[in-house]
Image (cartoon, rainbow, N blue to C red; front, top):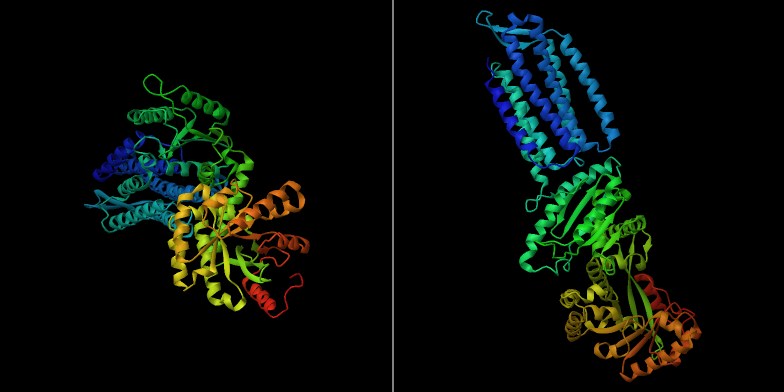
Length: 640
């Protein structure tokens, strides 16, 4: 019997199976489907050997039995093709009901093929005057290869049509697997005494194992925990099945090991890892160097396990449990309140980067309202990205009136963005999110460049304008390269720096004072002036102004309103005005909406007035028309 090649296939698969079962694995549907392919291929090789023997000894077993065994081998080939389809569909149809519906169709097709194989005739091709069987042929074989071809064509079709849904490595592995099968089939067709189709299946299994299904690829080598890729695959599967599960994130901030000496830390880290590996009813993942994730699929024991874990940490670590490690805990008792693995990881990052999360307590339980807030923020982030990528960031200008010159002499540049439908989105809806996600630097640079383009397009002197005020966020003020970036933008547009006034806030300087002062010094040497925005709303007092090299102080709208509504505030504001004038600084009063308010501020010696009394913030072209009307004596009736 010529079974050497098949025996090599069996040995190869047994070796692969040995390594597979001795690796720590996570329960994934794709791995179950791989085991299905493995089993079908292994059984196919075994039956191939048995069929060769049955045909060899057909005179002993009788002809019907020999042909039945030979046809059974053909059926196993269909089984391999079906298992390959199943392997593809698990990755494509993540919803179980959709997957089952597809597989029912393929199983019915396979059943029809099985019936055809057993019902159709099978013949032998003899050599040596009919003494030896060279190969089998006939309608039964044609049914087998016809059905297998249909399945393989379907696999190729799915690979192309659903390529977005399929894991890239899986797609590459399956393509290589199919190539091996096709080459083996061609060789066996041309050289009928070389029976390598079944062995090709073993080689294909090796390809799948090495490229995709080796359980070791889901492990973090330094700890033995499952890695972030395994976390994504496993939670993606749970979401697809709509299964409820809980998740605990253990976050080791910089202060977690502060009570542990440096020479003990690595030993204690590994002790913690060994403990996490032994947690029952859960899988533990290393998502980052300072972050471990534990997923509980058994909801009945999840809360109990979380408490056990926290108690274990509280009991101490080290040789005598005398070293205390204090991580932060982020617990989602129902992690399926989100619907994607990506959102789950985004949720963790969002809460970690929120400075208020762990300031008062080290345990944070994520409920539905927290998730809804984060969903809204993700939408805003996408809105910002789309606006910046598609030039939907705009600058509106609110005029500032000079009480000494009785004309509009400056304006504040205010950022706006448009959504995909062209609707204006106010800054209150996106500024906080832009700051929290670090997008404010790019957004601020876009605004500054647009202001420079505006000054180039509409020379300010022509309209009686002296400068444009541009806001700097807290994040921008702490950005080390701010000065050089803005100087580069001004030079690229050949802008005289006297036309630029940058507004800083009180909170900005307290958070990054050294960096801010350095940026201010460089920009002031270049010729840029500064204003202190929102004075009266921060934590500082008038002494704060002494340290800041600003030329203008801007009273916030709330401070202006308080002057008219609160007797004590009136005296405070009058004292502040007196002291600011004593330092030879100009004052802008924001939020002026009525003639009476304007007149009062002018009587107090306020040098500049800003508010709806003159104009709301206007788009670029409307603002220019506003200035032109003012210059030609057709100004708004509310102008003094």
